[in-house]
Length: 105
Image (cartoon, rainbow, N blue to C red; front, side, top):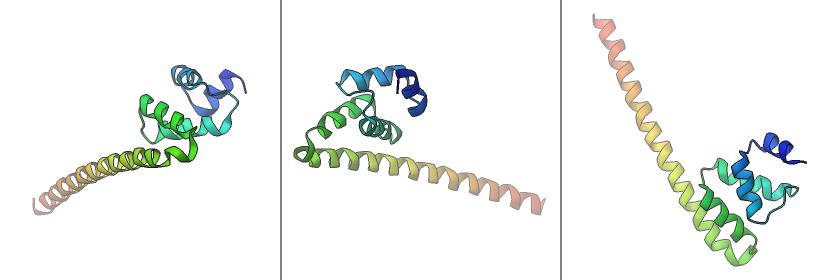
């Protein structure tokens, strides 16, 4: 795959692809590219992505550190879900109040 095909296939910005390549990873390494994109999709910032990728190359020695990074991100995502659920609950309450008002009105 050439650069343009990679950008289209993985929906990468040029800056994100350049950051990946600057770490010494190759354009044709599908496994690393997919890990890079997964990290982006789960909400890692670019520095976290770089750190995780570099740690991943050290394999078993860094599993604990990588697990901590993933757990931290998981907690962050759950917090976002809970905040979103609280907002949905408020929307539902307001809808309920309007419907009740309409029935009484």
